[in-house]
Amino acid sequence: MRSSLRVPYETMSTPDAVMLKVLRLPEDTAGTEDEARSAFQTSIVLSSIRCLITYIILPFVAPTIGFFATIGRPLGILVNVVAIVAIVASMRRFWRVRHPQRWAYTTLGGLMMCFLIYLLARDLFFF
Image (cartoon, rainbow, N blue to C red; front, side, top):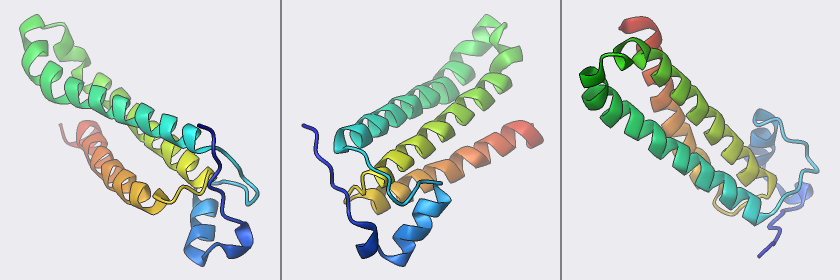
């Protein structure tokens, strides 16, 4: 099902126009709902993998192997950066198609990015 939910730029609110600028999307941007759904699914899968690595593999499995103890922090940093990139890409796709739930996903993705940035800072500076 390929449908475009595009809202004409002239009818966009000021916050919508600001978000297009923040996400660096051109005003005449276009896309499909399927692209937005695919990007969302990819970011959820990457987030799930990140959680498995961060909360199961690194704390429980890695210490028994010993080798992973030295690469735990760099691996956590890499996984968090990949997750942040996936969230931003997903947001851009939601906004590109002017998806009706773009503000809800932007809020959720923004909260997830704040948590990931906290984890990144913790890995880089505090431990």
